Amino acid sequence: MPDSPLPETLALMDALPDPKVLVGPDYRIVAVNEAYRRQFGAANPVEGRFCYEVSHRFATPCDQEGESCPLRECQESGEPRRVLHVHYTPAGQEHVEVEVAPVGGYFLETQRVLRHARSDTMERELVGFSRPFLRMLELAKRVSAKEASVLLLGESGTGKELVAHAIHDMSPRADAPFVAVDCSGLTETLFESELFGHEKGAFTGALVRKIGLVEAASGGTLFLDEVGDIPLPLQVKLLRLLETGTYRRVGGVEPLRADFRLIAATHRDLEAMVEAGSFRQDLYYRINVFPIELPPLRERMDDLPLLVERLLARLEPKRNVKLSHEALTRLACYDFPGNVRELRNLLERALILADGTTLLPRHLPENFGRRRGGPAETFLGIEGIVPLDKLEQRYLEWAASRFSGDRPSLAAKLGVSERTLYRKLREAMKGEGPAEA
Image (cartoon, rainbow, N blue to C red; front, top):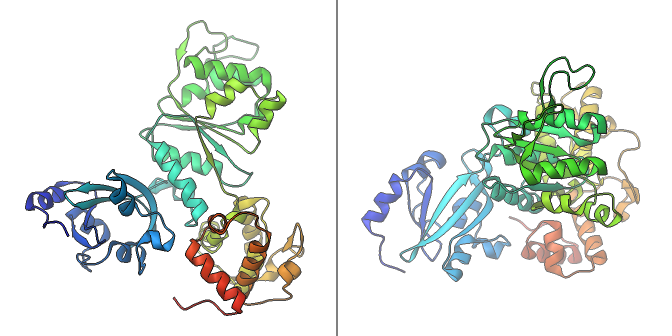
């Protein structure tokens, strides 16, 4: 162990505004500052306990549980490390950005709870703790402080506008406007007028000067949704705006300066469109500075129970409605081609049909539960309702038999650690139930 930390180090920690944790190389917490006590509570002292025990309730270090461990990486490299983790806090499980730096033989952790939605707009809060979701959220947090253009990629219904809002809300531009533009709804005749505005008398019907969406977004974020739907003739006008940072209102002469951060989104394969000649290559490179792939719901099914809970609370905040075990099982057997948007529609329909406070399988559509490959009852050879642990065992066997990569890649695809995957596969082969926690 290194020498005891100097009193000056401990005093400096208390003067810092962010929650700080001083950790030894053996993962034991040496000290925390006053900001940490205020945010995470002082009722249960943490000094002397392991950091992974306090934050994750793990029995071993994070890297042995399949998580990235910034302290271990900092030890090995001697350089600061930053990751996004899910920590247990007095408010429950929360997304926490952990930054670790070496300090005189110890490691100083800065822990910042990620607020990716403003307190007055919690309906835009991003919900999820699965590995694919956390990878996406960490990228969004990292780029939020920068001015780089962001391209959000993913299927329809995965929440691209929510992520765009989150990047804006975490950015230095958070207090300025967020302006969304539905590119699929802009005709060629309206494009310039809507985006750039027009002067009075610029065309028939232009009775007054009108500012465009670019001007409305000044100082903030311009979100171009479904940018892949912009026709080729209009793409060159958008490219000029992005390259020069200037524009003119329709009918205007004087160039105006644009001041916005660009976030674009599409469900289309833009690379294929560039190859086919339907999307300009120069525009593609201009907007594709920092791409972020949004995972479809079928790849983050660990988040399904939490998503259902939050969606029900938003749809019917006064009813305290819950989903039955059987209904949740049916949802878990579905691919959700419409992703979270489809899940929300299904729950809204079920709420209309249900008179009580529990949603049952009969409140779901009659033909619901049919995968693209067959009915849910015959999925993986299962007939009728079975315990969830049995369903998980069958699914793991099915996934392992069809996945062509190695086990670490399969674990990453499933959103679990390698250790967890090996244990669950071993239990499945033995026909055992889940091990006790």
